Image (cartoon, rainbow over all chains, first blue to last red; front, side, top):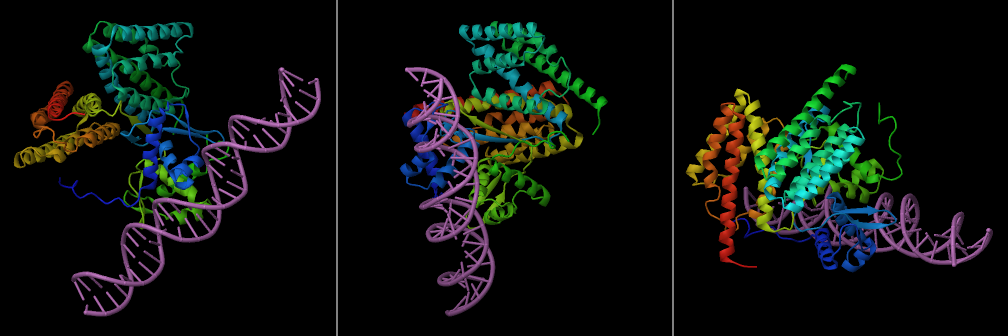
Length: 244
Length: 244
DNA sequence: ATGCAGAAATTGGTTGGACCATTGGACCAC
DNA sequence: GTGGTCCAATGGTCCAACCAATTTCTGCAT
């Protein structure tokens, strides 16, 4: 009843209104991610606004990753749409490779530990079985392909985030993961990157299966520590072989 | 001389190119947040693209919170812009108030603890003095205004994030903070929200000053725990006084 | 019928030009 | 000064095309 009792008047908000209408439409039609939504031209006609306005609204959604536009094909829903959505722009310090990577790892260390602990608290027997399945797949891939199991490794972790019951874990760590790989790719780094972290996947799983949050947290911290070590070794190596 | 010598084929990417040009412009002119950038019409003319294309690009930036457009006035830079920027769209589970708030707190618990620990490791004497200053201001405000010290409280925490040396902490927690307050505002919740967390600010500071990472982590966890308790109490209260 | 190349329709991307609504400053009467 | 009026600048919306990528249809050769 202080600033809310005298809100700014709302004279125009066309494109915002378009988005609200879109939210309603998606809800009414129960559109699922991957489905196509109406043509820009149709939307413009139905909503009685210019196609330009529709485009501005869709551009915003595209920027938020909610929607994907394919020229000649159509506009497709990319994620569940909800009225309350937070957008979080992140900027790294200076774009310096090593520093940025370490910073993403610090975030990941914090979240990974917490997610593992929550997972250990909340996992149902079915959840535990699912995580074990992912772990088996990963270990198998690790052995047959001599350590090249990045994809399966990632799926194992994602399973843990999901069981933690908090979608934010997966979303934020996924962003860190992407950021990490943007700088990483496979730039002549240590060949056996990730090898050291391998055994901790099973110890984490054991703690989760035993419903031991503190243990899971501790093992997750150890896992990230090995990655940080690998990274430091890789950085030292790079420093020797080149300059700039 | 790696990717610059073989740029991606340029079939279509007008608006993206516009953004890249804008990044260069902001860098070249050393524009600071708050300053005005060129008119849409001027940009369109200079870049040899349609004004509509310029608008699409600016709409994206506006969606990212990088610029603010004021009709009749101009377009203003709202945040520092850098080429390596990660955009992270976050969506909460169902928009259910209580669940969403608890989820943001789980993230904050993880990060707050880690940031406090890192801060205790890395703080210089000057850093410690700065944090103590913020703490004093906060405690003073708390006493004179009977607990209404949200602003000063927040500044105290931000100081810790900054000293942690990792800007990602502040960015992510700030997003959580905003999300929290979007649902919160002051919806007839517990009047003394945050009171319980008050003493832990000083205990956290003490651990940081004593260079005790483990202690700082533990105290930070306690602080978040009190907030979670407050939130649960508020939710229970609400459940009694209304329905939906 | 079948398969496939090419035409036609569909759809997002871009353009240029026009007009409206808001803003902020200049100017003026009091 | 104070308040009002006017006006130029600027973002917001609209329209009517055309371009480029994609999909769908058509029709011919097999």
